[in-house]
Image 1 (cartoon, rainbow, N blue to C red):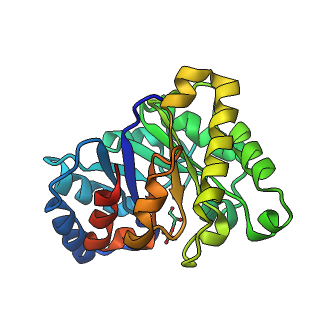
Image 2 (image 1 turned 45 degrees about the horizontal axis):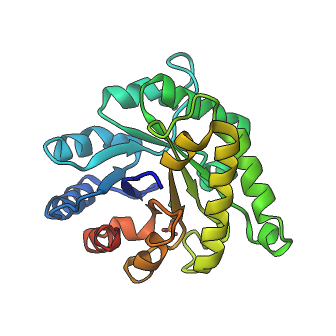
Length: 250
Ligand code: 13P
């Protein structure tokens, strides 16, 4: 099996203030690090510059929560991947289920955002996941497989693309799938990627789990064969919890 660096990514969503960002980053900067574990923070876009400055001397990476497909132009309120690269981002989360729900983003939109991320030289974290109704109907693997196929662009490599499996019903609910369910979906994602991109790319690509990951369940989830990290919401807002999750990796 290819060696994959574990990625522990914090998605702050629409949560921050200047004071909160300083306190949280101060806490994260006390984390001594762990070999084979990469820590990433994704604050809301107004805080990317200040947070980037706070972590610039550290190994903590900076990421954004979305981007527009275009590099510039008349798109009021939107942010281009090139701007995110200019601000020091390494990653862009695309296709989070909250963007799919709040902004009607489709797989085609997510595909275009991932391409824009690649064009800017950044890595895309492409999010997929089924709703509870879809899981109950036994459609999880079909839904997730189609989302991956239609959202991940042809230029994807192990370096520029990460896939995050986030069951919609597990986000912010305290509920998680069983370890067997998570591994089943991750194995299916990797096998779909293998068919399309070949063994070398697919076995090097990181697959994250997201949805109510916390210190008490992180070790079990992160130990699964095809889970290469976590995309963490609520627990990424507390330095103690986020670093405990990073410590549980590997
Ligand atoms: P929670 O960790 O709060 O469930 O959020 C998960 C998520 O959506 C991360 O992108």
